[in-house]
Length: 343
Image (cartoon, rainbow, N blue to C red; front, side, top):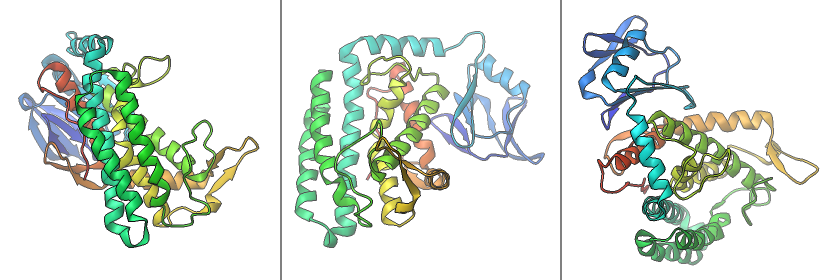
């Protein structure tokens, strides 16, 4: 359990939450594991199947404390709301800002700044760890190209120009992604991004990782009361979780791309784990998909220090913390949305 941004995160699968006076009590096997005063909390997000007592749900609803339920893997299930639902004000603010192109760009540019920043540091980490095996000059040039884009991104006021800057940075980053593959280059190579369908094993894994990350981001946004379908960079499209795609932009290089590179470079996945269909698409086999999911869950349990909060937490909570920070910005509690800047 972690208490961050006045939000209690229950990450243990066997914790049952109950009410004792003015306290929320975490119970494990009928023993009290911890207790927290309700007046110190603005929200509770639980990843436990054990659930919570009706008394606690009622107390949270009366006090305006959001109580969200997710599966242990992070899929959003439900949220408890009282008669006076503060999320209505949050979502109205979100919709108004999404309709304002300048306000949308102000938020989107911080997310793209985070994406390019993290892409650059992914390159730099590879240069640091494997510089003797790689073309350091090529990697350095890509890193420098991205670095030079950051000031312009941070000041951009037009969405179309922002997308153009993002495209330049993505071209530089993807141009060296193949160089960051250190094992079995005949199977695992990256020439260009192919999505629908993925046409090689690397793209197959990227697509799967992005899908998992998008689901995690959507769950995080819904858990804090935001509408995951109304974005700022990605505009409205039926059936598309646009805000989840926005939020995951800054997390793609450090969570999804690095995860795929780790699987390949640590020989945790092999060429026989893929099947190719008649239309040319390449997919993970069922056993490999299950192994991929297992490693993804293990990745989400690894601990990092959040660069903005300075708190240690599992990778899996990063989308939830970023969603909370975005909600606080929309409410006016923060002057800017702070992107996740990994290093």
